[in-house]
Image 1 (cartoon, rainbow, N blue to C red):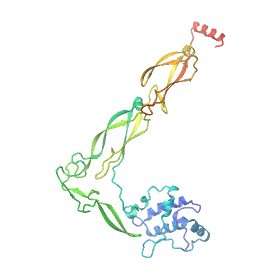
Image 2: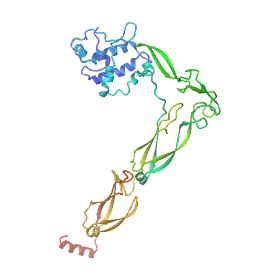
Image 3: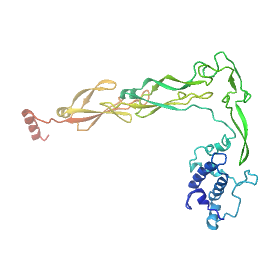
Image 4: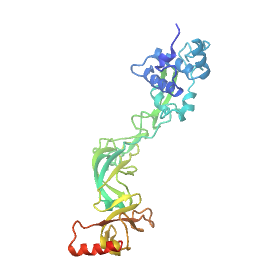
Length: 362
């Protein structure tokens, strides 16, 4: 009975190579026999369908004749071992076209350690996050803050070793001090040899003779820890500060990272536009016409600015070097947006003066 490879992979006949790869990835992971609920028969069918539909020449013949010359695309010998029909080069070559993440993701469950020859990734603790509120001025000039965080941290009593103070470390009997255990696993691919981290010593090769009473030999425990955070000058609202190694600790491994989200309280006067600070300044009509000097309170302190005569509504004055720090020696500017405040009512004298100005064409 002719097999419908498109139906097996769950794609239509016009499916692109990327769609076919994605379908194969999903189904191969789902049906692998070594997984709970796996199905060896369906796994073979999925592979057979992929070997044909992923190859342009074979797919063309299949679409035209309903077969691809009867080649053994199933990829398995009578003994259940792999044959040349298995070709994973499409995954490696197609990485730029379709994001599979890490190739180990699809086969880590198959071999217990991925396709990397048994290499083990270093143990690493979980990343954690928190957030703090700072003032607008602190976001411009930077500030040091301290926060209390409850997390899994290194045991201070045993310094993370898990051993009772004064107790010696001894060679792990499970791995004979190697930190790794070599195991063999039978799969449909044959017998696979894999090296994994020793569960008893977690890769250290040694274990405590007596366990630390505080952490019960774990080397880590939950506790509240004060963390000093350096918030750099010029940080923006919503930006993250990363502190490497300040996340969750893990026994016989490296700690994760701490991410701090910075929330900046809006300022009543100033707004940030890039590396510039913007503020509004209300002028009297006479000051706009004749010019004057104004004292302005900035984030750096009080400064005096000159208002030239004849300024217009929404005109902007630039005060250089009073904006956001960009480096130790360079800053953005302070932009002063001018607004001319017109009186809602005029006295008789004011009206007479303005009438005279009107006659002058002003």
